[in-house]
Length: 248
Image 1 (cartoon, rainbow, N blue to C red):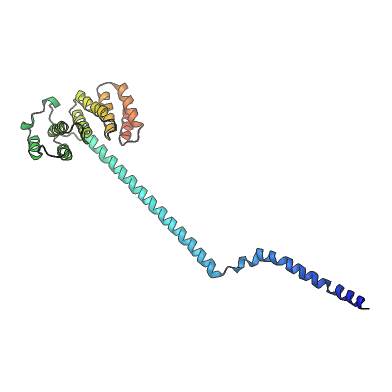
Image 2 (spheres, one colour):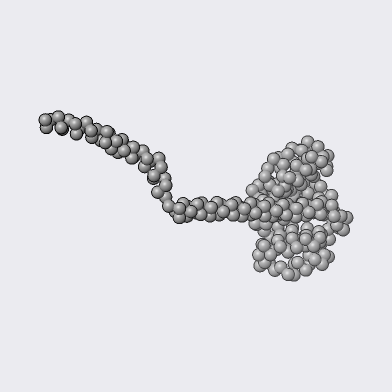
């Protein structure tokens, strides 16, 4: 009798046990799929979203600043190139400055040239190289080409291998070009390229030496030298490209 009663109780409780087992088995799944995701409170979600928005705005601001600085740098580079081209144009005769028609060899002596005499009195033998070069360049900037020739030669006589020696060679070559003394210009540019191969003025000297070859009829050598300059990355490269485009 007791056995039968126990069997009846077990049979009657089976559905309840099965239901409990199913609930226990399904609990982890429900936690993974829905309950855990909804445990993040609304304030926490809002805080994360605000941080993301702040980072996005900061990145946008930095990107705009970089683009603005890149544009300003490009403008400065263009201004530098424009200034160089303007000086090159003026010294090449584009602005038609008034100069003596005498050749370089016929320039009067220093005593007969007021600017050169003034230069000598202002610059003692103890003057630094930079002071001597600056005085010569100031004369060039003032379009006193005759005085500049004497001053640059004076600089080279004092400092033949100085920091600005290559520059003096270059400007002497430019003035010779202006006077159409192409053989003398060729000498100054060639000496610069030969004796100061790593100087900053080498590409400019090559550009102008190429023009000298062109003006004296040696177009093959001119094209070869100008093409070499045009293939580089110096400021003179663009001028060489334009000269080649206009003349070949």
